[in-house]
Image (cartoon, rainbow, N blue to C red; front, side, top):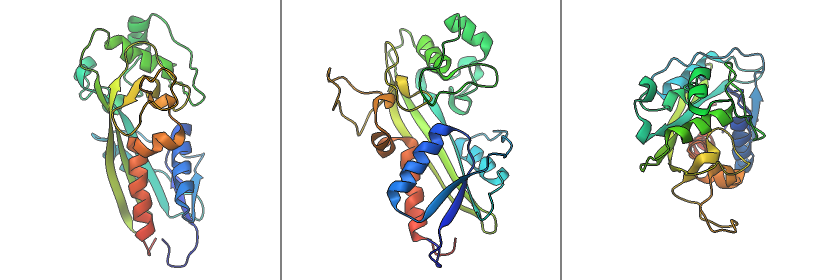
Length: 244
């Protein structure tokens, strides 16, 4: 941490409320003197990178820090579904296009209609596609598929306006795509159709079945998720620093 003991202000290069919530929760648990700030007026960054980490750096470098902040944290994440590799010309699928692969035309072909959002943190894309459309679209493509293997991937990058690149990490969480209907009211994105393969048992579920990411608490999800693991390494890095 800072040699002066002053609070570090980190500008978060994201407007995603779900990511903001998970990050702020993690840093609050760390008990480090850190404040997360949001540049509400920042322009959206074109995600032109070829990897999650490249996109994280684009976001970090192209987001102006708020007053009093010299650090910008960029993050890019998404899901990879093995059995769907190459679908619609995307490899890995949906990968970097996790929020963009489902156009209204493909949605209408797969689902016949738009499915309203129901999670508190759900969003709607600029083209009018809901989060519910996205994960129902994946379930439709996976009908009859035996290989349900998937993973969440997260690239995270910390940029200092004077020092340049400070920290980067790439993490993943192995998953299985469920069969049947989405489950859970927590989380966001593809959480209602994703079961983590490690670290979380069937506790608190009456039927004893595996829980989806959307059935986990924020604390449980942060312990085993791709973003939680990346944040854990970020916190460890910040604890050791004296020159930020």
